[in-house]
Every structure is written in C-alpha cells, then in structure tokens.
Image (cartoon, rainbow, N blue to C red; front, top):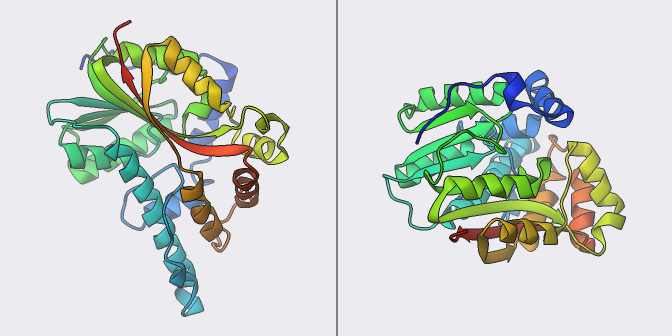
Length: 291
C-alpha cells in the first residue's frame, strides 16, 4: 500500500467538529475507564461494546473479587464482538491488506493481524490513540504488519484499490456516511469487502426517542438512521450481502454493565432504546462492485 507523507493536524482535522472529537480523546485519555480497565485484562484494548450470553455467575461469589470478575467477563464479550466482525471479512490471505477505520487503541487490528497474518493499517484522528496503538504494536512485536496513522478516515491518502477489506467498529456515527463510503469504495479492490458494526436509530421512532438523544449527547456523536447506511452504501457501489440485527445479542452486555463499578450512566438509556425499538445494533457486510 502506498502511504502518503505524514499529515499535520491542519490537514487531518478539517472541521470544528472533528477538532472537538480529536481534542476529547487527546486531552482526556483516562476518562474512558471502561475501555482502559477492560484492556488491562490481557493487553487488548477495544473501543466498542460486547455481544453474547454472559456468565452470570460472575456476580455471585466473594464480593471482594466480584468487580474483577465482571471486568473480565465484559472484556470477553467485547472481544467476542470483534471476533464476530472479523468472521465476516471473508477469506483474507496473508498477502492482503486491511484498513481499520477509526482504530482507537488498536484491539481489533491486532486480532486481525494475528488471525490472517496480513498487513493492517489503522487510522484515527486522535494523535494520542495513534501513539498508544503504535506502542502496543511495538510491544507485541508486530510493527512490520500493523501500523497506525494519524489520518482522517474520510481522506486516508492510501492508494486507489489497494485494500482487500475495511471495517468500522462503532465509529461511523462521527462522520458523514456518503463521504465515508465514497472513500472506502475508492480504497477497496474490486470484490473487496466492508464490514460495519454500528448503533443506528429506527427511521420512524428514533428521532423522537429521549434515550437516543441522550446517547447522542453523551458521546458527542451523530447517530444515523438505519436507512441512511443503505442509501450511502448503494450510492457508492457497495452492495450489502449480509445484515444482522445484533440488538438481542448486545442487551445482555449492557445488563451486566449495570452491575459494574465502571458504569457511566449511559447503560439505562442504551437498554431503554434497545428494548423500545428506537435504536438497533447492526452488522452490515457490503462488497464492492464496479462503478
């Protein structure tokens, strides 16, 4: 993959909103205690939620170690989510290249490199996250295959049709989908694949939901309606092949989080929004066709 020259803050962060999002992660790296505490379990740091059936016995037993057991179980569920995403990338070969859009501290990128043995490039608008993830790559001894870049995923600077697969894991709510998928279509080889896991609002009821509005405000994001994903994909020659509603699979994760001392207060709005149907947790798989 052709890598452009290192970019400056001025060229990467092009709007006031992008600067505000980057500033949050650069200036408050310890505010996301959930992500950092869970990552300390095995050194694999994620920036997303979990799926699957929890082992509810973790809330039983000695109180002294209960919180540690909950943390480990939450981390198991978030890692299971990343595994599920990677399951949907298809038959990736060691010679292929992948891009992690909005790569955070790098957890899913490291899992992909280990599973497929291929080159992975992560991009983030947070210089702190990029530095953290590259330090992790050095610690893991994989700098020859896994690299993180201070880039905007709307304009990565990577070469046309140089990537076999791209994923975003709970990052699309920070960008314009039509601009994002235009860039991803440019990067993907013909037949290449894009995999997305995201929360999205119900087109009919999401805009009226107080819980969805609360989530939006809490994270400073712009939750998109479900239909907007499919319009933006279609407009850019990315054809959905698989759509899975993961909402029933993520609700137990949020239920378990209510028992954790790491709970942030956003747990109940998520549970309410999911249960009332105003918010959904989706996996979308789309393949590139010729434009």
